[in-house]
Length: 219
Image (cartoon, rainbow, N blue to C red):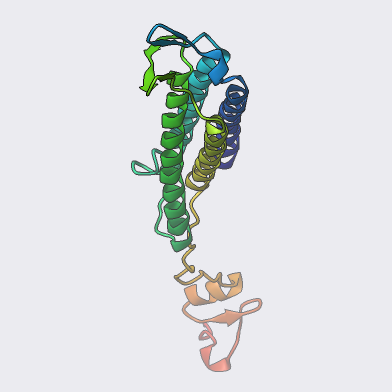
């Protein structure tokens, strides 16, 4: 059951993460170019373009993917492990440590990607900003090429680490089965049990197994 849930959650996380990266690649192709920004007096006018909306949606999808992966993994398994599993086994403990490290690295990569996504969104927002003067020349801030591409790749890395963490933390714990101790009950043959219950152990059809144990004759 835990394995099936891990596979399902991994698929959902992958869908959101890959979609976020795809939006990042599309945003790179639609980002504002320097020749698309014009100066009005001492202000730079940034026209509306798809990169602003695409970058914002990419941030949301990436954050949702990370939240789902972390929640499915038990919040880095810092709370109760999924299914109440015990981590006494060394193999399971090592797997848990790797899963937690992968989750932390996933969040670090996702936060870096989100920050650069946000920078791209702000620099592609339809607004007016004060122009910078370099001598007599007016300059407008513009997002450099390749930023959205690098962020999209970083989103894929964060998603991959998140899926890895989710799978490792949700797999059933490996337990060491202790060797069975205790004695096995051995059944006694019916004739032997009956013999123990009789004051004179007999064998077969009431005949004494030894003449000296034969019952005394009556009369």
